[in-house]
Length: 182
Length: 284
Image 1 (cartoon, chains in turn orange, purple):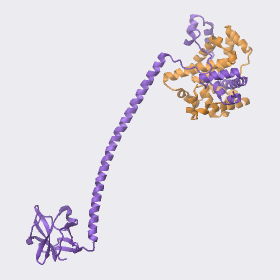
Image 2 (image 1 turned 180 degrees about the horizontal axis):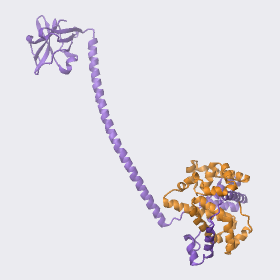
Image 3 (image 1 turned 90 degrees about the vertical axis):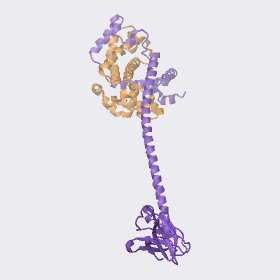
Image 4 (image 1 turned 180 degrees about the vertical axis):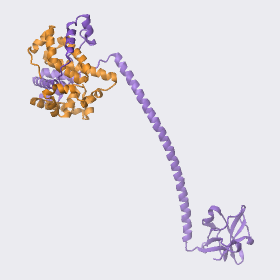
């Protein structure tokens, strides 16, 4: 559910740039569930996700001057920060354990995240995911939440490297069609 | 540029989910700047992904909110600085707005760490394989030796069988030869029950003998075959006993014969038969 804003995006950006703490707490209240959801889905660990959320908001607070509205909306920018921060953590954790990214991710798809599942079920997530063919969901999640490369995805899904991009397009087109119905 | 083709190639979706390389990302960004349709397609795709991501939205634990707001409030104080993640403490260092995937920073130290790790891993793999191959080699050498021994044994058996076959075939040819007349030589008196057979070809003069049931001679003694003709004994040769007892032995040719006799003589044979040592006799 998209938060219904009482500020325009331009006002939020301006407020953040002006170090307005009221605007910041407003941004936190409205965007933290989505950003926390990304962190949780990437690291699959509540404690780590909480620490990540703090890093993510500090990066937003400190990095707002580098935000360029020409390149995309504020939410897109914040999601990128969340995703990059979480995947960096996942990578260094994988690095410490001497694992490949895929290996860390492997348990992820089998063991469904109950907390995530429950809290968003009223949004019809279960229905969306049911309709989204498992292979298509996996290709999106491997790229977005695992940060896998095309080579890794081709290997994991046992498909030719040259077809990864078109499969990704098909998966997102299907996702678009399903989201229209929700 | 064929914009439609570019859009349908999947590059845009891959860019949005962070699947492309940094170079590809820069290409997409310049295409966005140049073509409004591409900008629109990217934005539409971002919104799809964002709706998908929002499906996974979860409210964070309540207490984290005040922790983060405190950190913001005190960020310029030394205590606030302490709360910050390490990479944010030095101003200007946080590259928060990288498009999709940050690359690993390759400091010289990390490069050397990776090189060292790879070297150790390579060595371990090499040791592992060496051990495995050494074991395999040893096993193969043992197997090879045993196969070789086996092969030699088989060859020997084969040669023995072939030799035996030659003998048997030769004997069979002799036995089947219709020109050879076969005579049984019987023992009488104290030699009753002793038996030998002699085959003689009157045309070719060839003589063959099977010792059959003659008793084994003493050391230094040998049986000798004689052909008696008109009262005169003609030497037809000595023959072997033991293993050769039942074999067909070729003797000296005989031109004419009335009676074959076998006497026991000294080893190598005698010029004249010792008739008191006559064992068996037969008339062809």
